[in-house]
Image 1: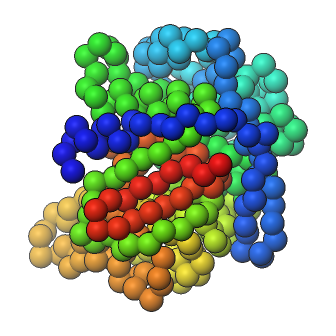
Image 2: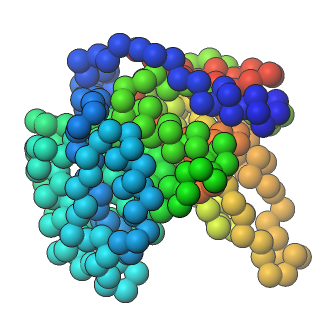
Image 3: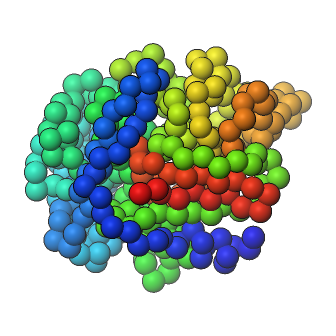
Length: 343
């Protein structure tokens, strides 16, 4: 499939009717929890921008503010934007207070995390999500924001949005390439309630199959680090997507072994492998002898669910918005791999 064809398919979103917001989400215990989908946004709604993880300068969110405003939304800039405590976006107390204010403010309909990096795990257990359940709103971001996606999915059953953040918006929209535009526009389309559908470039390592399940996932290293905590991700009967950046192959192998040994891989309905940028060893002779495809296939060879590689999600330009917790259909065959939202 050529690049133009892929962009056309990836950017094609089927219009759908917004549902009241209750879907079934299965946990490892087999109990049925009720997933709540936050209200989709309408013109005039407010999106808050905050830095619960890494530092970001005020100037570095301006392109995102301009684009969000052009979409017809209002923007509330949090106090942590421009704050700095080493690599963090302010002290733990600063980041906790700013994010909590965004959670509790009923006028803020969605919270866009300005960037990832590191830091949410330092405040996650102090955040009070009670109002998120009574007045749900979209939490948006990826990378370190995976902590929020996992914690909210496990403990509060509210859908979240895995997508690019402020530091990925192009400085000049008129000079942005098609991939940049499509990925940023996918955020708008998801927040407006359009039905998301993506078709990835076929990969000979894919394993065919067709399943329907709740979509969960994010950064693999973060998911591994959350194991056996209050934020550990339940994956039974779900479609898991993973991605990572600047990891050595042996680390990637270790993390997939962790998924296997903790039973997560066995419980899945489907597996989506997004972008994995590999950090090479200084001495080529020390390089791990398997690539990402071999690493994954070794761990899932005894399971029969579909597996999709090179899906457009991760620390890369083709990082499209995915609604975590929402039911999706994954269909993989010799010619295509399609992920579409189910309503």
